[in-house]
Image (cartoon, rainbow, N blue to C red; front, side, top):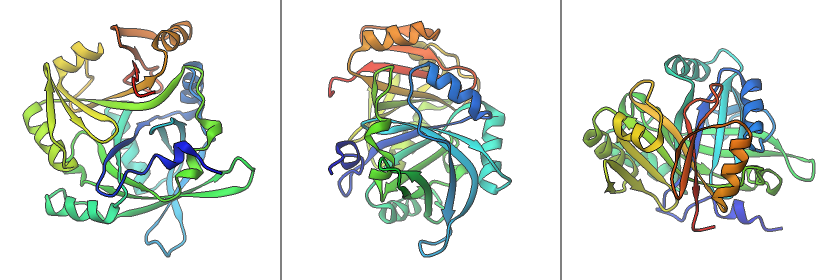
Length: 302
C-alpha cells in the first residue's frame, strides 16, 4: 500500500528540505496536555536509542520523544529519561530556555553531507545511526531508522543544527498521525534570532549549500521544501511578536494550513495568545511548557 506522505519525505539526491524542528521540554506530561489542547495529534511516547555503528545493537540515548507528524515534515518534542551525554546536552540547552533547540534538514545522502561539512570546517562528529521502535497501523512493531549528521556545537551556536536521512519514512509518517484538529499540514519555515545577521546568514548558507534572499530586514534561506528565516532580535520581534529571551534563539516553526481562518478560530478558542495577525499568517505564543512561538500560515501548495 502506498503512503503519499512517507513517499515524499526524502528529497532527491543532492536535494535538501526542512525536515523537522525539535523543542526540548522539561516535563513531557505538561507539554502533551498543552499541545493536544492546541489541536495537535501526537505520536505515542517513544524511548530513543542509537547505534554506534550500523551493525551494532542499539543502546539507550537517554531521551524520549513525541512528535506531531505533518504531510510535509514534522515537529518533535524531546525530553530526558536517563543519565547519558545526550541527555546532558538537552539539559544544558534547556537551562538557556525551554523551546526549539534543534533544526534538522532532510537529505538522501548523509555520507556526502558529512564529507561536505568536514570540508567546510563544520567539524562534524561521526554520522549517528538512530533507531526507535514504533507500532505500525496493523499493530505490529516497526523499527524507525535514520542517520544523522551534525555540525559541531561550537560551529553552529544557534542550536543542534543537523541533517537527517530517513531510511524507513513509512514507519513514522503513518496516515493515522497526520490529521490535526487545528488544521496544520506542513512545516514551512523556522525562525531564528541572531546577534550578527551577516555572519549568521553566511554561515547558514555555507552549511546548507544554499543562497539567501533578503526580505525586508530578514534573510531567508530557501530549500527544496521549507525555509530558514534569520533576523536580528529586533527583526524577529517585529515579525513574530515575541522578544527573544536570549541570543541566539530558535524562535519556533511556521506551519502551513489549508484554511487559515479555521486554524485561527481553533487556537483562539483553545486560549492561545495571538502575537501577530496578518492577512496570511497568525503567530501565537506557545505555552511555557513548549516555549517560543508557533506560526500558522496559508500554504498555497496545499
